[in-house]
Image (cartoon, rainbow, N blue to C red; front, top):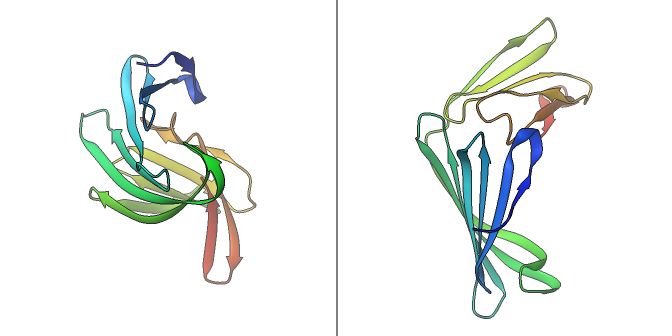
Length: 151
């Protein structure tokens, strides 16, 4: 395993070079794995395959498998990558509720992450077991029928 470094919100992050064309990323908090990710380059260096696994406190996992193609200059993992496909392998259940008088709470029971937000674009701290991975969220009105957020 690669050298562990301090990460966001009290997490620890390690990146290991498995081979010259394969990296593994592990994020932990208090000794518990929060996520693992495997990155692998194609032999010609033009395609990046990314397998992401989030691990809930109850041990259940959600996975996302993505493929990217190289765009522009770069060598190895360094460069600009454009997504060509993504497959999400988990049930995604959201609860949307009022937050205080003028905000929203978005509760994702599978990731155990709750986002509390109010309009105006200000970041509000997230809560729940995976708040270390996504620490804050924001909300702003884009038009009469559309809200946009950050993170």
